Image (tube, rainbow, N blue to C red; front, side, top):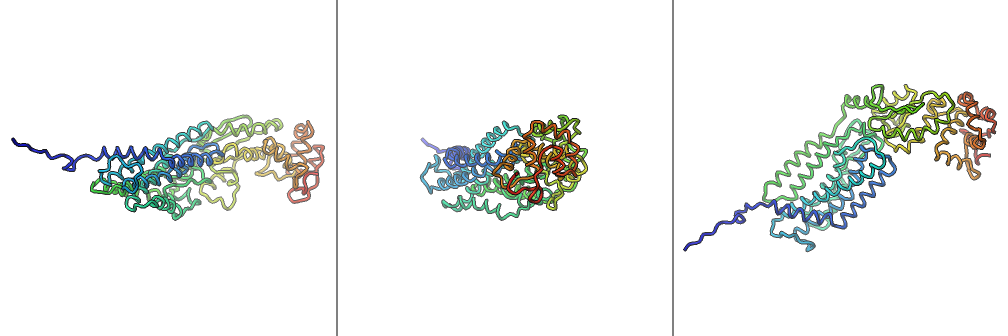
Length: 493
């Protein structure tokens, strides 16, 4: 009787390690998302996001950017957790030993790298929850998914870098060193926001392409798709470094990752073609601009593409003031421009961004009240009211005539915040007031104040009419100024 022994697949070394890696990946992923540090990162990310967004009416293309970089606290937490997981896989700690110890070290670390998909997906879920919150706040424009996915990519990048570094430099402080490297990149890479709209510099190679708060998204030319691909390339290369062993797959990951990052990274950089800039500005400024206009007599509101949802807010701010104007009211146009506030349309020397001159030229050739595109719709109400009031009175940009200032302040006082400040400035404890505010405070005590202004409208809106002439026409006292620009030291008499 003879017996033969069949050579096992295990002895041949051909048994697949993929199920082992996937099993370890599920284990490591659950460990990360169940860890207290991860949830502290989630809470910090949520708090940071709300802090950044609470004061603004949501503009979704900018919200996409904000919800990417505010996920940084989660990335910090995952970097530590990934490094600690690699130390555990190396046997440097007895905490939660993996179920498959006989697996080679490269496969154990591969499980940690695969497990990074869990916190990355959880990060995306956090972003979706925050987006749901913005949907209840009347957002405008549309999401840029390639910008938004930069958040989970940042989490994966931080975890992969930490895993790779800890694999080859196993020390409890290695995850912190990895984070310092990521932070150092942002510090070391030169950042020139003044060129962001016309040239994309090395700052785009940083893990987080910071949003520029004073540049509208419509003229920023952010290569978000290229940047996301660049981050994915870095993650693949780091994953290969972390899992280096006998298998050729790690070298394949390194090669694909380096080629991807090496090609897509520099592809982001360089000047923006003038033809591309001209095409972009033609959609925003000029007779052929892609504007959505609505008329609420006597005001026509024209919003840039995607911003039509703000027209209701503008109307709510302006309509009570327009109702104070005497009939008939000349047509007034409110026109949106790609500026964060309309002071950039006043031709100051520092307004040298490429899109400002076309917007300025368009603005000064039209009889319009401008409105910006970045500040929250409810925070521009005073600025918008000021422009509409000036247009209704017949001022150029600012009402410089003394009587004009009285009428202008009378219109603007329909804004509750302005009215409250007016009461404060004219109160008995005020240290400083203005002649126009004192005159308006006295005029408001008369129930027929509106009819008095209407009866003398032409006189009061004449830029040559003085405070004294206005006071005589309105049958109120015009106090003498004691300071420059109509100021009264010590408050109203």
